Amino acid sequence: MKRWFEIFMILPLLMMLTSCGYQVPLEDTTIVFILGIDLDEDNNLIFYESSPVFNKGAKVQTETYQTKADTIRDSKKYFDTVESGEVSGAKIQVLLLGKKVVEHEDWFPILDTLYRNSNFSLNTRVVVVEGNVSDVINYEPKSNAYLVMYLKNVIDKNHKRTRTAKGTLQLLHSEIYDKGVTPALSHVKKDKRVEVTGTVLLNDRGKYVDSLDLSESTLFLFLKNNQKHPISYTTITIPTDKEDGIFHKHDLSFEVTNVKSKIKTSYDMDKVTFDVKVSMSILILESLLSMDMKSNEEKIKEIIEERLKSEYEKLFKKIQSHKIDPIGFGVYARAYEYEHFKKVQDNWGEALSQANINISVEVEIKGMGTVNETSK
Image (cartoon, rainbow, N blue to C red; front, side, top):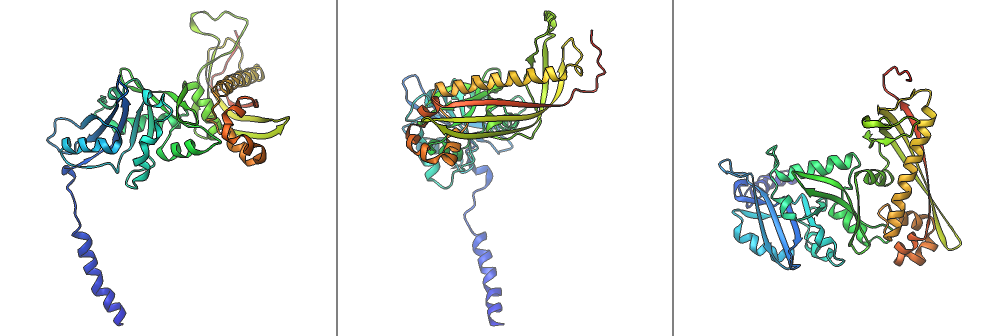
């Protein structure tokens, strides 16, 4: 009984202590949602911070500042002097990296404070900007949404639709130090609006080597993640005996409703071999073909399989030519052929460039729509 009485007396005191903590009103706080890093023409580091304005009487929704500095922590000294409120970087949602930054091999250590300081979120999206970071961070969406929400929605939507990788600080750190895979990040540019252009590919030192367009990104992400969300695939051309003309009568579009990929690893004659199998279910969404779809279903299926196989072979050649491994073939080699992988793990990109990668694609046409077709 005495013990319960003591607990009963202590609880109110604890509640009083927690309520008396130092609290800063929201309107007096500057919460950094976007951090940008770029290089100027003289290769000086330029840092950007973008924060929403919560004051109802404010004429702008976002405040953006930039400064020249040597490190992220060094830039904070300047931002503290110009920001109107108490600065907090714990809610950074998007990290924008200028392409000029990632074109250098030694850029990754500048992110050290983001990993060393536990206040920063490791789920922050890392995005490579084609052109100047200032063009993106100063963009004002016509929807009047906060820029950070606009960027997050654009990236997340396009990742869900397998048009771009969604790199985070945590994933980037893992892929930089994992010898069996190389990093892949979202790629955006500012034209009339900020738009996703595909995926940036980095080598094992974090240096930019190439990029994937939207179609290549889709094929790439099919292998990285078994996809179950319906995806509208790009139009492909089906050859027929008739002329195409101005109305593109050879074009066919389909929706991928389910994708599964399997990668088998073997080792022979000092060379690793990967057998990749991609299986997918599709629905025909659009057909301008001047043929009876149902009677030619098997032919169409085979053409789609051959076309996808050809596109995968081009993708693998691109990856091997740059001696990178964004798909993570090295992870499979380490798991199933560890003794062989251990010998080449410090130079895995070179080993993968000489590997045999075989691809097979299996397509199942689940439906062709509700149109009752007749051939002409």
